[in-house]
Length: 160
Image (cartoon, rainbow, N blue to C red; front, side, top):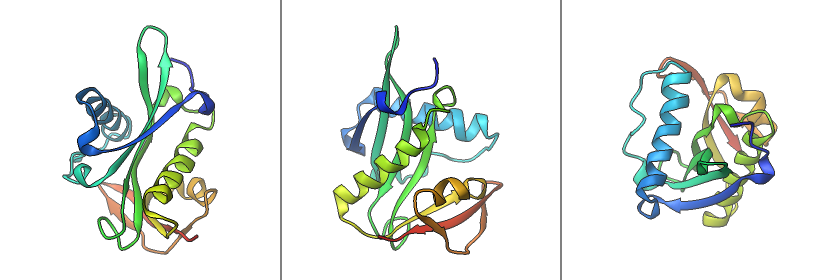
């Protein structure tokens, strides 16, 4: 599978109970591939919060494989993860990186969140190494560094 051009990805945003078994399996598989295996981080990904989230799925047609999940994020209304609305579990498939898909994912996640709950501040818990990436989308470090599952993180906020 070659890198997915961002324009060839189809986006869907669904509540947990609208996910098919195959979609849920794909989400959990992708999150495990990246967060557990690639990042060598043993943690409980299934944290009980998926039922409270909207799930943004970015799929791409792959020859012989049908629709493959190449990008994903989960979205929360204000008051669930933080006082503000939030985006989390932002992930792109390793083989699909390098063509702007991650940036498309953030734009889609922000648009879906605004479409669902209106224009409002968005708070994220970002891996510290990705600060510049999120800064490109208007997120600002709010000076709350922390370590989660052995990885340095920072809280960042986007203000409308």
